[in-house]
Picture (cartoon, rainbow, N blue to C red):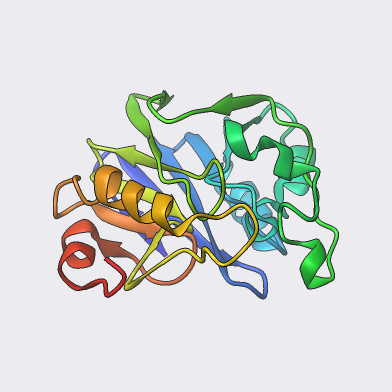
Length: 214
């Protein structure tokens, strides 16, 4: 599925048995990132190769295993890609208990981060500016990436269509997550498209009106 936002297109690939949404935002047909490369990253690598794209960054919304599992393969294929990780989830890259892979019988790790980001920061993809929003609660350091010009926000596992991220897991906080969603996501314009870590795309307005958890 491709989301067109004018200057930028965003390819969504659904990866692995846990059906993690991996996003590839691309500007001018050449500058791109890979966001949350999950389990079974073969289709992602095939898409990048066929499109002639070399990602500038591998960007993570949070540190759970189903969102970091493909990092090593992407980094191997594109070693210059900067692995950019939320600061308070950095430890989860190498901690299989914290990243929730060990409890499910896996042992998922990722390479060391090249850089970390925190809420309030900004990243540029070509001419497009993305703001880093605090949506922690599902994990200690979870963030969302908001591009006002494109009218999209990549929310990871904080906000879904009709739902929110689990908080009955180690390191999670329901109070913190709901507070951050209300303060940092629901304050965005109604027509901003919500690109979640799993499931279908929504909008901020739709989630404000009908999400039963909010």
